[in-house]
Image 1 (tube, rainbow, N blue to C red):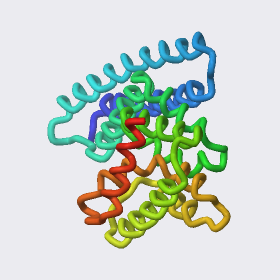
Image 2: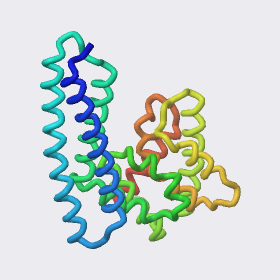
Image 3: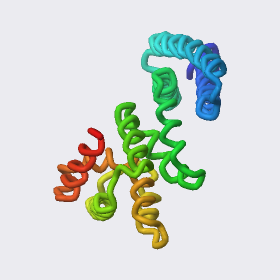
Image 4: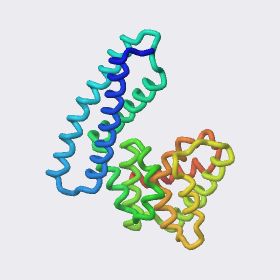
Length: 227
């Protein structure tokens, strides 16, 4: 049985990590909804303060583990490690400017559409988010022709169907994109727009899919990016 003092320290550490994660989630919402630069800077300063707390929690966990030897409560420690990793990823996301790019992507969609593409967009890297936002702008400014739009929508339907058949693990939310692509009253331009955030993932599976669809999508995507 663990000494009472160790149990207490682990419990306090776990509670603190959960509290900071909750704060980061709140700050993320505020940053995405806020347009005033001064207010955004205020939240970013708070986020940097939380980074210091995260560092201290990681050190505290190491100290506790060193003291536990072979009596470690593995499940509890594993949970805390996972939460600390989530905290670190969230801090990097918010401090690195990705939140601003992410907000710019979501601004292209209605509330209902955001519910579809938000889970996918969150998993993009910063460079991919920038590419997605640029292509969305090109579509909205009618820089993408009708022929290309129809071609990419058709190839995306094909690629997503193949991915499903081969049990390739696409990001959470892709089912909603498939449904939107096949929605009978949705015009091709709108279907393309909703599906844009999933294209980087489709391209990453191009080799595994073994399809001409991926190649055609990549060719067009590269052309759009250069525009």
